[in-house]
Length: 167
Image (cartoon, rainbow, N blue to C red; front, side, top):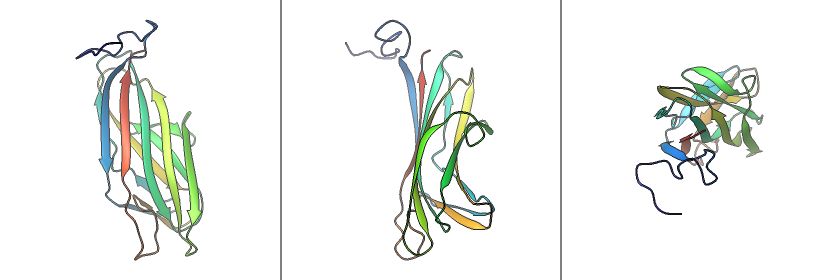
């Protein structure tokens, strides 16, 4: 396979049935974000947008954010397009993982990695990744924060990758 410039790679996929990558948009941030209250929520500061090259193409959405929460409970991820939930808890299919641990000070950390395939149609679309603390009472959750015990917090970096692929 050769090197292609300014074209779908490979055009129509290697088998001639689609699947080429059209464009990739990447958002990245280490800004700490905080949510409090019942089902405390934080929005991934790396959330980003993509302008579709063809209305029939799809978008592969990959998002990652580490969180610290003062509950020891699980976290839930959701993906939004243009402020409408398209994947996650009560919102469609979502492939992802949340692994939690506790530091013994009633704070837990979670690694929130999610992905989904979307068919947004023509235009520019903004994608957002939210992480929710899975407890309905007053708690605090911090994004890009792996340990909430005060002096020993380690800032992490969140990412969102949007790939437009031919269908």
